[in-house]
Amino acid sequence: MIRIQDLSYRYPEGGFRLLLPELDVARGEAVALIGPSGSGKTTLLRLISGILLPEAGRIHVGDQDVSSLSESERRAFRVAGIGLVFQEFELVEYLSILDNVLLPFRLHGRLRLRDADRERAAGTLQDLSLGDKMDRRPAHLSQGERQRVAIARALVTEAPLILADEPTGNLDPQTKGQVVELLRTKAGEAGATLLMVTHDHALLDLFGRVLEFGEEEGATTLVDREGAQ
Image 1: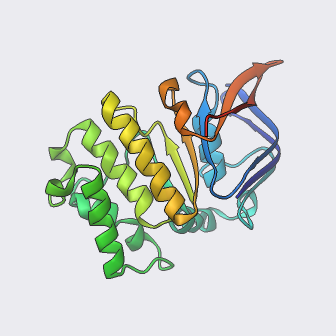
Image 2: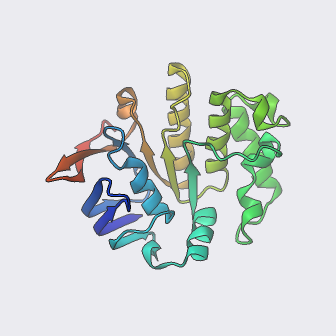
Image 3: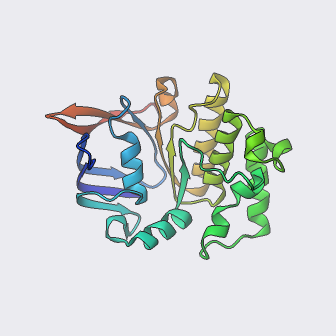
């Protein structure tokens, strides 16, 4: 599903450098990304999704060479092909919770909104204990509730790849495990790949593979660790 070769990225203002000679993630894998703050976890997700472009190397998602696409093509690729959970949530304040979840269908013509999509959105919100809040606006939700809305939006299109950046950061301990289980279950039902950034090592047993960021000769690299499942 994801194939990266000879990747190099350095922040323009002289920050860290991310070096990744090779990375392969198979379709259907559930992979956790761990490491200290500022080590490049979020940067890697942004490179895979085409929000950032590498200074060198290739990033393939499925049969798509992301690093060769134009800006508009990368935007269309993200909307139709990736379920994204941002740390900042990126919710539209004037839309209801349900309409926020369904927003990807209104952003690109490749996604057609059907009754089944509305039902799936409502069902996912119900699974996330938000079924009674679908008509509310984001301003009337807690941080944890807003985060769960962002998770529902990432799942609703049944994209083949889900990229989640600290999706449990604002959740209580019990809800964290439930949300990760839901992400894994929904990804599994769709045959999707899940790549999730987390600082919570208590969640790592829920993943089949763990990639840990480390530093070697002044650059950030990845060490492949074995997961529990």
